[in-house]
Length: 200
Length: 173
Image 1 (cartoon, chains in turn yellow, cyan):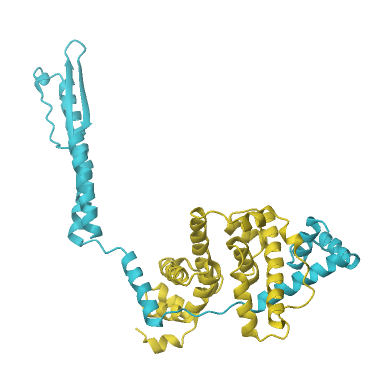
Image 2: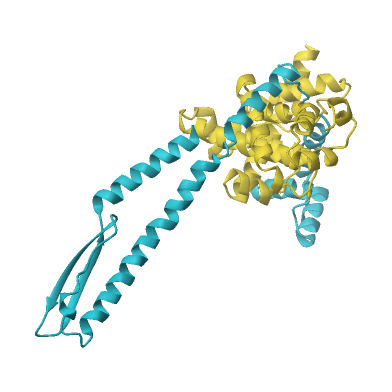
């Protein structure tokens, strides 16, 4: 049995093969390597630190249980990310059933609000440090409803096609397109407003 | 600008349009200033997001984070069934149907003896050796017929289920 140090030198593919044969140390190394990314994806979707920690850990447990099904068609981290996204979507669906919809969300869903937003003609992230841009994007994401945030994350960060997003979010492609359109327009306006605040 | 064109501008940006539709949208962008401005905004936003995904770190130490995962994995994995217990469970699965088969064979032989030319054949007894089943018999001398009803004991069936549940509980514990 290899030691922790020896595992740290192995590639993801090697670690996955060892973990598939029951090597828990190899799996621990995979967790240590990718835990931040998996946690970040959960947090970007649920916007709550405790829930994000719990969901990311649940995703790792599920991954261990299904590890034999992983055939290496995508990278291990992509496979893991899909597991945590599915768990977050389930979590958000359950949470949605227990809360009343806000008036803002109802307006968003009815459509047309994005048409009242002015077109942003400047680049709201120009001249900013990367860290600052990321912070502003994170802040703006936090101001979107979960439907709009999720569609944006799945499209821009996970680079999924409309069809795939519709399947995961259990809605039509038309709904995906209108949600994505609204989310992008709102993001542009939020980033522009942060820029204006900075200049004033 | 129509909602349809707005969504087509976005679909064009995302590479989700067919060749013909893409050509139509390109023409619309060239001809319509508003379409051009909106397309530029969508493109800038998409590009800003793609290159700048927020980076976060788990707010727990590596050891603590892993220990919770490890415990959850251990809890979720079923404990192996004890060899002796699995032997008795296996034996039960074989013995119950075997008792049924034995009873049917016995009744079959008894029935053959009834139909034989042996003058004392009608005195053959039907004995139920299975505790899992009950039997009722009916003999008609005039029709030269002998009928046997078999049915599983309800009490035994319920007891068996409860026993099986107890066994499962023991295995889980």
